[in-house]
Length: 343
Image 1: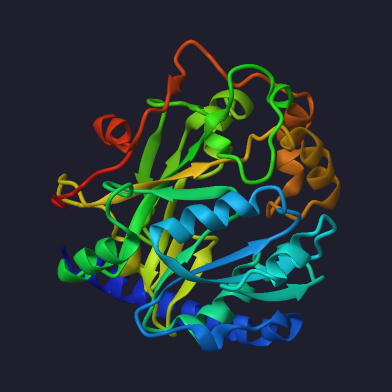
Image 2 (image 1 turned 90 degrees about the vertical axis):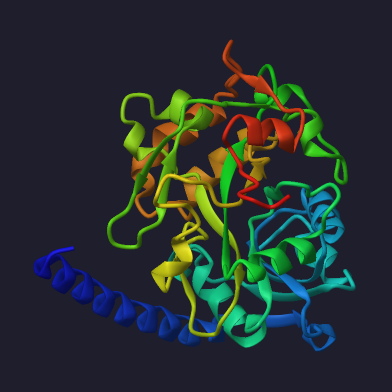
C-alpha cells in the first residue's frame, strides 16, 4: 500500500467511525418509538445466545421460526412487532422465551427496523453472541444437525472471530407460488425445496469491505435486465455483540467494518452458513400487493414496482436449472457454505 492509499484508508476509517456514532445516536433517539409489551430480559443469563428481529404480520411463520432456532440453541428472542394485524403480537407475548416491543412507527424511517434493533442490542446484547434475523430466515450451517450454536460460537471465539457470514438462499416451490398452502408450524422447506445453485455474482465493497452478493431466482426472474438492482444476498447474521457496534444496512454490513471480514481475502475459505429464505410461501402473492401500496420495504420503492407486480402475478420460479435441496453437505459441496476448517 502506497502512502496515498494509506492516507485514503485512514480518512475512510475516520468517516466510518463518525458514521457509526451517528447510527448509535439515531438508535438512542428511536428508543422512544418502542413500547414494551412483555419484557422478560431478566431471564437472560451470561453466555446465552440471543436472537433479534423486527416483524410484521408473521403469525404464520413464527411457530417454525422459533422452534428451529430454539433447537439450534437460541435462549432468548428480542423482537420488535411493527403494527401487526394478524395476531403476531398476541402470539409472541405469551412465548416464555420472548421479550416483545411494539411500535406503529415507520419501518422505512427506522432504517427498516435497524434503529430499533440497535437500541435493543446495545441494551441487552453486549457480550452475547447475537443472531439478527427476519421471520422468513432460518439459519443452517455446517453440522447444524449435530452441533448447536454454542459449539459454533465457542469455535469461532477460539479462532479469534467475532462474526459469522451467511448467504441468504431464496427457496421456492415447483409451480406457481399460490399452488401450495402452508399451515403454521409446518416445515416451509418441505414445499419450498428448490433453489438456484450457480448464478451468483460477488464483489467486495471498498468502503465497508463487505461482500455484495447477488443472484438467485429474484435476479433471474425480476431483474434480468438490470441485475445490479437485484437484492443483495450476503449477510452477517451472527455477531459477538458489543455496545459500540451497529448494523449499517439490515444485517448485510456492520461497523466497525472488520466485522464484515467473514471471507478469506487471500483466496482461502472461512466458515460460513446459509439463511434458508421462505419469502416465497403462497402468501407472498397477496402480501406483495400490500407491500407495494405501503412502500415501506425499499429505499426507492418505485424502482421495485415491477418486482411487486410480478409477484402479484403468481409466477413459477422453477426452471430446468433449479436444484432440490438435500442438506447442508450438498450446500457445502456447491460452494454456498463452508466448514472453513471446523471438523
